[in-house]
View (spheres, helix red, strand yellow):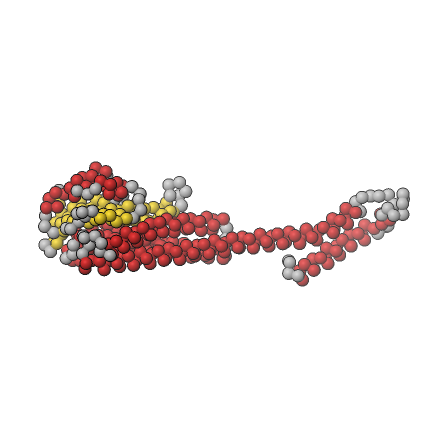
Length: 327
């Protein structure tokens, strides 16, 4: 769906025809949400934008800024958590948003729903004076600011998940905890892959390199750039926390395994001499053939004596291991 408005000191006027909107006085904003290839090509024809930039909007490419003779193209990604199609677990999904910034016009285009752009669009329709009194470069800034704000919301949700993971790692770590740790690491990696190029793309605008960005608007783009730098730092911090949680989980798992192995070793050590005694008296050499062939087999109390001796050996070793802290 393509919508067009022209706004300025006289207010906001909607247009159904793109050509008429371009010819009107004021700042022209063309907003294309969930746009098809045909709609994007129609925008490209009216505003004479390069067809490769239209392909960038439709494809999943990294954020970037490209300057042309009559306009500047900026591509960013909106990120959000959504259920995966295969695993049904939450994962980071992105929606590209292309901004075409001219001297007195701006075009926002996205192949999917773009809630941050819609909020800025509604602010224009509500007659926000900050839009009406400034040009298209400020409109592009407000869109970028809303997109970057979505990343903060996303990281807040991930931070809550990290806090739950840290509690589970300390209290009762299990296989599901490890799965959540790995899932969170993948989410942070996906966010990092979007933020780093976005920071470089916005940095071009913050320096005022494009002619379409006025000097008085550069400070707004520098603010967005600072937010992206903060997002990069937060992402790295959260990645360190997740890695630390994974290390704690592995250490706890290793400690639990060591405790089990120690207990089994103590039990095996106690039964080794008992097994030896039982094996010796299980050889059944005839004491009548030789006085050296197990004379204890002929004792009337031989069996009770052996059992008492074996019980004493086990008790002595059990007390010894307890004193040494093995049990």
